[in-house]
Image 1 (cartoon, rainbow, N blue to C red):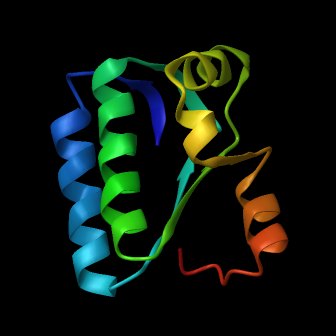
Image 2 (image 1 turned 60 degrees about the vertical axis):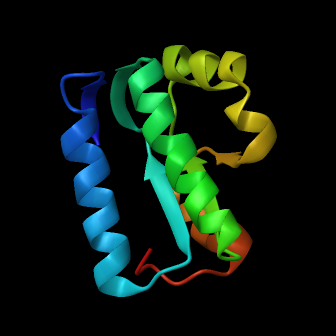
Length: 102
């Protein structure tokens, strides 16, 4: 993901993530925020929706690479109480012994 994650891109983001999940049968997902400069409530909704879907199936959603502004929004939204946050995708993979096909 990159740029601003707001209502103008959330339908596309949601559709792309859902398509990838359906095609791969993955139960773990990493949202890489390293290229994201802004996220609004619609973007948070996409993340939360995938969390609910995957956690119900026994999987996990991880957050990675959020900068100061995006990290603050994730914190204030409460998503950091539900999902683990890491400085990078590599840190997620290493700490959770996941393969890079996430």
